[in-house]
Length: 444
Image (cartoon, rainbow, N blue to C red; front, side, top):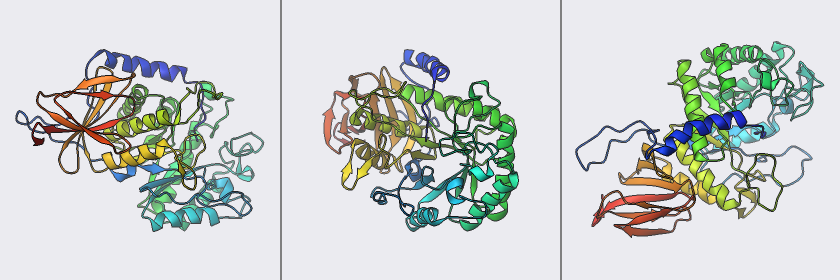
């Protein structure tokens, strides 16, 4: 889970990056640029959007004995990938005492996912107090949970036990959640999910890679899920982490698409400098919280109702799709502030946005993500070969005129309602719409 913290430096860098783009009429294409064809021909599209873009976290799919409340039913929407975090499956939760293992809850998650052909990403970490280098240090999951293990032999035993038990059923392992580093001045003494040195985490990564390669060679090792600036990722890669991982992980939390675009560009630049630009980049955690204007939100958290949250979630999914993000994991299906499902039969606007984005994006081929004034437009080719734009305004309501005289368009809302616009303009709001362009007399 992401803990909100001061983002002044990161936001300043993001805004500086995006302000220049705002002055022009077109952003650089995020997706691979299409090859130009004959005049009027549809350009050759880039990558197809995989189902794995629509991953989730589930907090309460299974409950421990004595835990109150009903478990969360498996979502009715397709779930291609699931990240096990805040799911009762931490190291400290499956190994409460040295030599004692409790796998009932984790087994339930793994079995449910396997039954539905859902791939799993298991996030390693959450040190038990008995194994912790600093057992009295406070942590979000109990004393000692944010420290590195005192003995690397305990870390290796944990890895061997988990990877052996779930060989062939867990497809990827993430090396810790949102680590801080004692080597980084702003992290020293600050609370977090990991408070040790980068060198120790790299050592742990070497052990994780060796164990996974030995026991389950088909499984992937994803780097730590960093957040709030790419400097820790840069330090981890420079300290030896670049040679260990199969996937780069990052948590792309954002308050708007300009910031998200800048974050992705910054992370990809770090990857390029370390020679990892061909590795997959996964958004292993992101979410959009609702804080109504009548509530007291945490510092830095803007007020946002359910519809505004749904709009931002949909925007994020489009930008991630256009940025060739193979997997995204929304935090979380059954979370109070950012969830889509709160009780049986009770959903909110985020669920509708999630379902519509699955329908609009899965299988479509990305062409480019472009800016037109205050509008952002993702150009794609639908599964049936039709030319589509998913667009929204980044600033209130904005009129966007169809690009060709005599052209028509079918404009579809997130709720499924649609209307035909002929030779005119589409009014864009922050809530994305799908625009399918047609010739004046029929399909393009």
